Length: 621
Image (cartoon, rainbow, N blue to C red; front, side, top):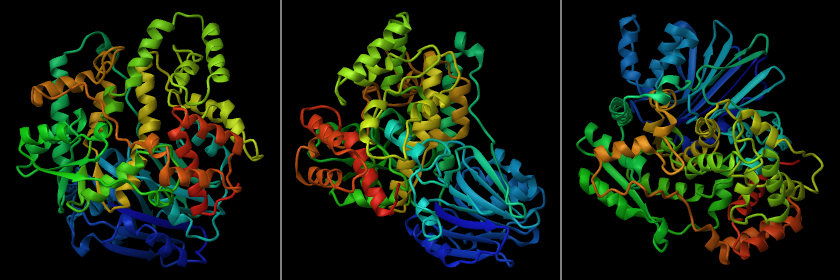
């Protein structure tokens, strides 16, 4: 795992100094080595921070070159099938100097051009300079595990793994993008290609971009997308064969992702996903290290006993790590690390877990992706229940109920979001059940800001997949949005802040295509069951006493922390500061509601993190 940053343009760069500064702003992504390279004409600069995982020798140094073809690359990620590709490319006459997957990436591009993307099984973000073609080629993996920001202006392209690297360039602007802010306040994250800063973008998952240095023009395209569900599988499917295929795919994915030249561990919570990853890991290695994190004093968050059951059953070398309570000083640090603010307080335990595990290994496997692929979230069942029970109700009546809920029920009132969701056409749309702030509340929050307007609802509606099956709409929506823009961002930033590489075997693209192309909705979730096919695999592979029904989210006792003490003091100071972006009266109402037992903790966390982020980067409206 690494950090990349670079620039290319029609004219030579006048200021080269910022590139190394931006690179070293990401030292946490790669503490083992650093490199910088400029083309002879000064038009292209590439820089890299290295976390050595595969081929620890100097031969893995980046930027890496294929001088005879005029190619140079900076690469962040892992190509899990690099050994198979190396064999194929060797058969075509390519001679390799190293054992690194970066050199395989270069040779793959030399052999197949941009079509090399279809050959890669992995998580990646890279930028490749093709000197003979005068082009920069950027790409990001299918699920969006690895990040890539870019800035196009004045005939120049700048790009980096983290936004902070681009902000090392003093010429770059630092102004809020109004549409991105509205999306953040509504959804909890900034979706797709948008970025919280004007003039910047994220390269979306499964997309590539080519920038022509001679013309200053760029071309962005999607190179992969989710498959359509085979219509025949909805009515008839060989469930035993489907289960066999799932087991074989997961076993092969875990086996590939266990390969590294540094210690590898498995994060074992004792839930379905991580337990299945552990089951497959012991098939790949006789010495599997598993780690569980305990939160002393917070019994409902402690999963150590469930993890012990799995570790004992499979005979892993199991370590229980006890996390200390987070201190309030962690929030400004996380606000700076996360590049864009995000409404997910579980970034705190994710950081603490990564910090502890990094003391024992450099790579860790987790269970991310299982819920989106196989129907694990509770709202999948509730949405189907809503459609079955309330769908026949006239839409006009349901919209009236939704409007009344928005006007009459206070923010944070239990069930308010679901009542508001009744106003959506359940045959085509998708309620925003995890809404942070609805339109009415956002208007109040932003009453003092003139450079702002409501766009989130329409933008989100445009991203809802067209599908007649509400579960297909929901899982595909979550895969492309919540997983890519929340879960994977959280895991990447929190783990890389600790120089820990996190891998997600369930996000092997073959498993993704299997889940969305072959598994019928009835084997994912119904109005009464969740994660049906995965749980049948647990019955096959895990001990009989394993609790299939337990669903424990990775969270902190934020509500308790906000009753008083250091966290409440910080929240009060930040949100009642005269320079705060948000309306004081609305914020006070949210705080009072929290004190009355309403669920406003995450909403308040969102506002605080935004303000801390804005301070850290001196961002203006």
